[in-house]
Length: 185
Image (cartoon, rainbow, N blue to C red; front, top):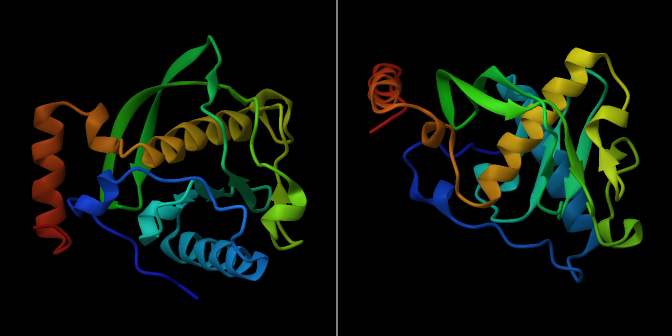
């Protein structure tokens, strides 16, 4: 089921996300993951954090062209040393793009507590502990895009948004564009 995506300046986008409860019923997590994937694909996105659909959980989905990936309770990412300016958008800011400096690789010491506790549908690639995006499948461009998307989506867990990386002029331009598109306030 396609869920409504929260749009900027909805204050819920600034809400801190909490860990996925260990006692969350597996079928509830499966449904949420499936709905998030449906929503992301329907909107033409590459990644989506649960907070963007009104669920303040440390849960994200992404697809860089290799099939869906699900990240449950990822630790704070360890950023690789190489950085690049990358063009970036956000489903909560339709039609708005900005150049953001990001690390081209990230590593997670821990991504989920236990596979048995997640109940993730079998059609997704559940990423395990000790993951470095440089070691995951894909072309160099897909690995870079995965690292960029992970940094962006994990920032949503802390209420950090695309506009927090943009200049005041770019933010004003983004607000005016959102209003013109009928999606802002």
